[in-house]
Image (cartoon, rainbow, N blue to C red; front, side, top):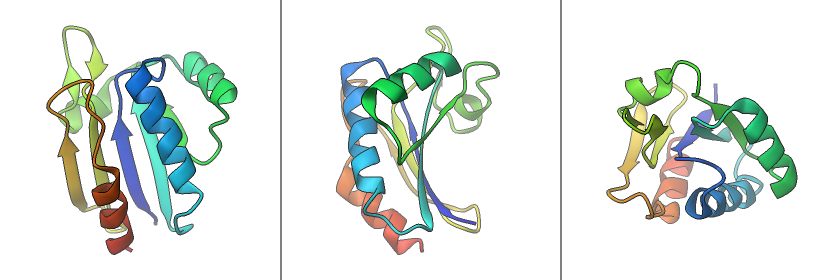
Length: 124
């Protein structure tokens, strides 16, 4: 029943993914309670938990697609050979409709945060 910002990242332990997740964590505290930010990677769940604890991530839901890579396949984010997710961001409204998509063309690029946040707010 909430608008979701879903950010697919390679690994929380890379510099760009670390920055992206931390920034979304900060921004999430300023968003409506009807918007949730989810960061998904193929990192193992215990690795994610350890990283989140060390990074102080408390506003973003971090989930693993390690086991089945179901998200990666359904959202066209799975890079099969290294078995990681490509960097992408989706805004999904309350009716399950994708309202905004950014597939980043290079692994080291960060999303356009302003347009993602604006899309999430307009999806309310």
